[in-house]
Image 1: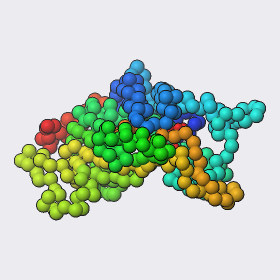
Image 2: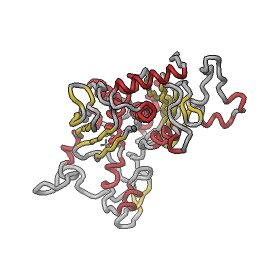
Image 3: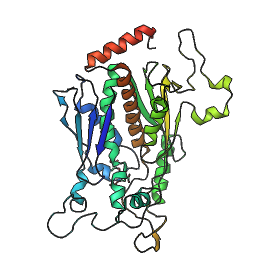
Length: 363
Ligand code: EPS
């Protein structure tokens, strides 16, 4: 038993869609819980005006009846309201008549840092929009919706996951983040930052050291690195551990098998150890710059300036929510693998029986 997600959707296409396989039957899914996470993702100082336009209203087309999962594929859809402005430019079959609206002329000046150049070369596109639309972080909305469902499953087993911003543009306090964002906007520049996700109530034994691909630390690092603009990930004290001695680095085991410290971030040998799972992700400054960097025109071969279009100054607040959803997803996947069960009651029974076997009490 595992949990799988397949998604599709372009940033300015009609919609984002996802199919989730592997949820147990009987899991309560509240529209309000998904809507709240989607609302949090849209918030944040320095986001694009696009966020005022999008409602990120989630629709469930399959797999849910009267608030409970059916144990069958769950189909989620979020419409892109901005698509109305791109109806011709992003159409599957161009409507009759002259091209109108946005996206009707080809993008040939790739932005350093975005998918424009690599995607164009890789797929043989003539218009970089064919690459950048899917590479856009717009797709994180559907992953947040799925993550909210995963968080619901984890909550049934007493687990909670929370993401927060810890740095924006190198600053560590909220006032300084706002000032740095204002300064970057005034300079027509962008910023990055760092977020942290903490998962609590996690039992020991999720994940496995049997193979690299089963290590939960590898999966969490992979899913965080898979989020747009993330360039660094650390678990627990991460890179700082490399600068300490073993006697300081490891978390001593108390009589109740808990730890007084958590340098490992709740993961040893790719397996949870019962302490909170702690992961951090570093986001690079966003690559769409209002004062563009040097580029080359892919048609003429002439030097030029990269594409300029509406974008965010920084989206670190959004990353905190997206990273939370991603970590929740991997934990839920590990839960499905460890406890199995077609119905939620089976999952709960397997979880309780396991905690009883190991004599584990959540602190
Ligand atoms: C993004 C560019 C911007 C962001 C977008 C991600 O898109 P637009 O040019 O349409 O404003 O707003 O993020 C979202 C739309 C979103 O919902 O998070 C990019 O290039 O990755």
